[in-house]
Image 1 (cartoon, rainbow, N blue to C red):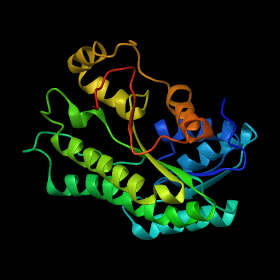
Image 2 (image 1 turned 60 degrees about the vertical axis):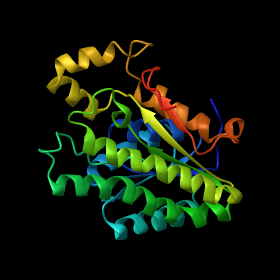
Image 3 (image 1 turned 120 degrees about the horizontal axis):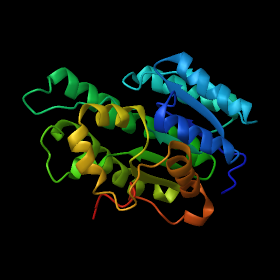
Image 4 (image 1 turned 30 degrees about the vertical axis):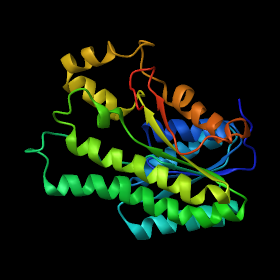
Length: 253
């Protein structure tokens, strides 16, 4: 696996699911990881898992809808580990439902935790990355934004598609500083996906039939290790793109 020894990563929503899988994979590649989430006990559990494997970890309570929390998380990461090289914008509140059902409050929460938090954290991370000669930022979107049937996914798809635009802008504006920015569109064995499968069994069956590889990705092995590889020098010429880690299901062309 790619060796990222000496690098530092800040990962939001790392108390479970994809964020936790990415944290474990990054730590396995030699990265010191700051893991954040709204529930401190959950990210402390992730940090302990990292330490038990011999890695370095810092657990931080952080609500990504709070600008103050985001600034504090970046500052604490830099103070603990001496810099910042990798940012993983993973945390997101999901506004699911038909347009009639999604409330203003739910849509606003999706926007604040998604594109607004993403933009804020990217801007906070930028000077620290530039000071180290560059870095890699990962933002998360969803194939929900390009579904064949958007019924029930309009608000969710809208906030996730906005994140793709921010990725393209950051990649264009900060590329000269050595900062690469990528959007990741994953299918993974996360608590959120498991909930969706349990609550939408018929739709889930139809969905799985559209995945050429016939399975959902593992959190650490398929998603986390892919982000490790994308952070390395072998892929250092890649930026501004949407990377679908979904077994071939979506088409983001």
